[in-house]
Image (cartoon, rainbow over all chains, first blue to last red; front, side, top):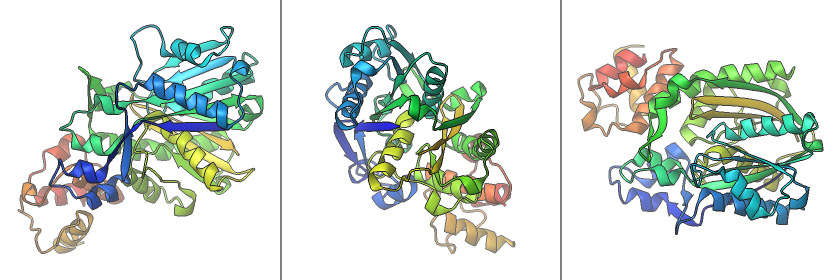
Length: 305
Length: 70
């Protein structure tokens, strides 16, 4: 599948951040989070702006034609308005034909997985031929200046992915999960984000192994069949812990948030694009994708490159 | 694992000098923070134990960690 991504215009380095929190050193923050710098929206930039930029980047860099898009999916929890859907606004900004469908949905860290499942369903059922899936998030707008834990982790960005008939056949079966009883563990209330780090960490350590096994079973695969693991890039410490506890080989487990931070629903497509650019993705490779987080929500699939 | 071995393991996880840590050392004197909490949760997990967010935020001393994580 064709992927492009963009990051917000502003840059906030960890070196700059720790000046506000003298009890932390840059080395300590980078060692734990894996984030050296993150991009943040500035000058009124919105998730819709990032979505537009990502989609236009896809068009210009991946030979994608806007006029071929017959369904647009936009995943964001940073909508421009309560109504109408930002998906409709994005359709207009991109000049996607008015004969196309457009659907907005508000998932976070599992958003790309859910979007991919919707895209596959639309294409496989014959309801659409070319689905443009865009994930875009500006969590930094929700984060309080005093909340040093989340400020060090999150960054703003967007990704655009084209799922056509050929790409859809490379997407395997899905594993999904939802637990709304955990809603309060990661929530925006009165415009401010609250995250119970320990509880989210516990949730991740508990749910990821089960999800991995479930998605392997559903795809008639074993761990030996998986060439790469690309999980939601939550933070380095969490990913390292997941890798160690699940006994996953380091050389097959992708971790890179150095210059992006946690971009929520865009972390997985950004990681896939980075792997493509670096030449690590080879035709025929089987890649397990797992998204998990706010909701609480999780999902996984295996794609073939 | 005896108590000193647990303290040594904890010190390693928290990037602390094990000589500084005693059972009754108050956590607020050793820079106990959100990153330390996640490290201890991971440590507990490797020992087959789970520490909830409510529990970990109630910890006051090194001894509280040792009881829960080992």
